[in-house]
Image (cartoon, rainbow, N blue to C red; front, side, top):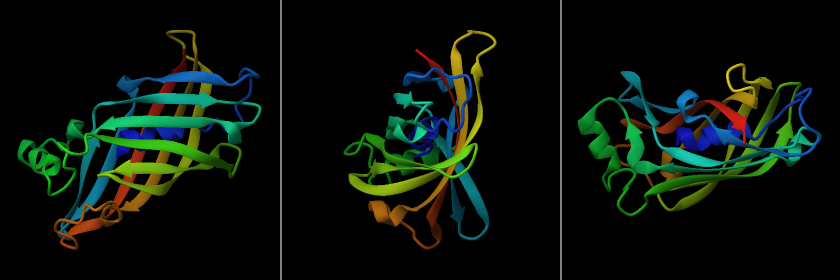
Length: 191
């Protein structure tokens, strides 16, 4: 989920100065991007996981950031909690059922600018064969040439909250929380 949501963050180019007037397509820097999720475990802790493999497109329109767009595909099989047995269970039919639903996808539908460097990206998240609208709260961290590659680059942080049962993933609710918090940190560079 987190990588899926990560791409959404990149779509928002809030108040970027010095950017090109035409829309620019960016490529995700997967080495500097993380899509994490947090779920309460029986009231004792909020355990974390993330998705390791994803891809997608981000087109940013500086002149009209609300017209930017993002699409992301995350491989469900890339889920990683640092606990091999838990990863195996999460991939099973009890949870993500990766054999039948190999990908999670996010496609933006609208972007609302809420501040100089903040906004909300609303889009369709498809997970476990179910599509629901999800809103990402996004902050633009920086938009500038990357000092190493010299290419135009952007960095975003994003958060969202969803109910996993809305997507047909309800095993162990409520002992294992229904609410899932998403945190995305991402960088992207112009093609």
